[in-house]
Each structure stands twice: as structure tokens, then as C-alpha cells.
Image 1: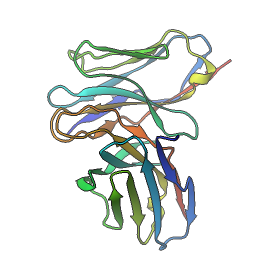
Image 2: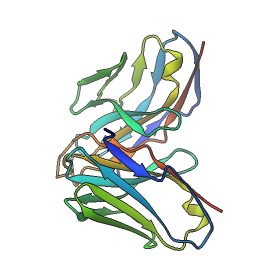
Image 3: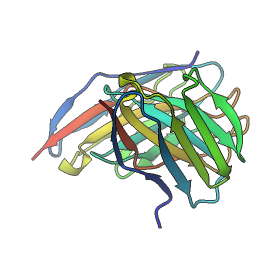
Image 4: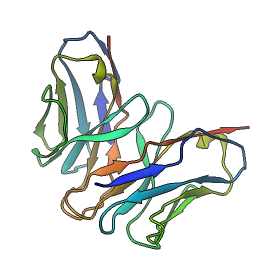
Length: 113
Length: 116
């Protein structure tokens, strides 16, 4: 079945540091890929998505590129802020069957001033 | 003008009780979902409904029964609550979940259920 693997957290960074959160997936065919963010005490919000190979999703300074050859969708940001502290979930929707999200286990990011 | 709302936000109850969680979306979406997030933050789909019809029912105990009175509402009723049911339950909606759909899913704020 489909699966998503994310790097274990927490990831602890100082403000303005460079962020990478690794995400790899296993799926048949060509899934669509997503990053969701969950701020403390809140629900999930879509951060960005990419629906085909080599697409780059971007939002709020975050970027991720859909790499089919490495089955990866790593999340990056050039300069993190304290307000970016949250849990980040990589997810996919398979292109077969009905569209339900398969999530990774989430990576907590803690940014200190 | 909350897009996806859930009530209650917190629910504390004793083992063996029956409880319900309500979800409403005002986005005009056709599809609604219930997800469970365990203590390790792992999220897993439980159910999805499309136009009031059950589409997906993952391996969830039959103590959990979703009900969709109309397209905008998807409630979750849980019978005979157990300790292991303690989790955060998220409702979500999307425009469509048909085959090959990649529509964005919008999540509610979650309901934290604690079973004592």
C-alpha cells in the first residue's frame, strides 16, 4: 500500500536558519504530494502541493519539488522564523482509487529566537 | 466564517459512555472525512462521505458510526468508549473525492477526546 516516510523530529533551529525536512513516499503510479502544517492547538492547513513530477509547490517562503526519480518531496525554507514552529506533515493522494490522504508521521519544528 | 467547524473542542468522558462529535462545513463541498490523530501525532483516515453516501470505511471498530444528515454535516458517534479511543479527531472536507481527484482537503480544528 501507499506510505510516506518523514524524518524524525523534533528539528530544532535558530531563527533565520535554513530548513530541510525530508519526505519520501511509496505509491503506485503518480501520486499527488502535499505538505500540511499544524500549529499548536490548531487543525491542519495545506502549506503547498505538487501534482506531477518536477512540479514545485511554494507558499510562505516554503518550497518542495516533486522528484519522481528519488520518490521524494523534501520541504525547504531559506530562513525560518519563530512563528514557523509547528508540526509538518507530508502526505500523498494516490492516483488510483478514491482520493484519501496518506500521511507521514509528522515532523515537529522548533525555532528559537 | 469558519470553513470547517467541529464541536466540542474538548471532550472528557468515562469508559463505556456513548458520545458524539459534530462537524459542519460551509464551503459547499461534496465530500467530508473523519481522521484520527493518535498520541504520537499519526493521522489516519477513518471514514469519508460523498454527497451523504459512505465511500470509505477503513478498519474502524463498528462502535464508531458516522452519520451525514446532509452534505454540509458529518457527525461521528462513538459507542462504549474505550481508553484507546483517546485521540484528536479531525473532520475535513473537499470539493470532490472522485477517482483521480487531488482537491485540497480543508481541516477542522479538531476534537480532543479523553477517555478516563
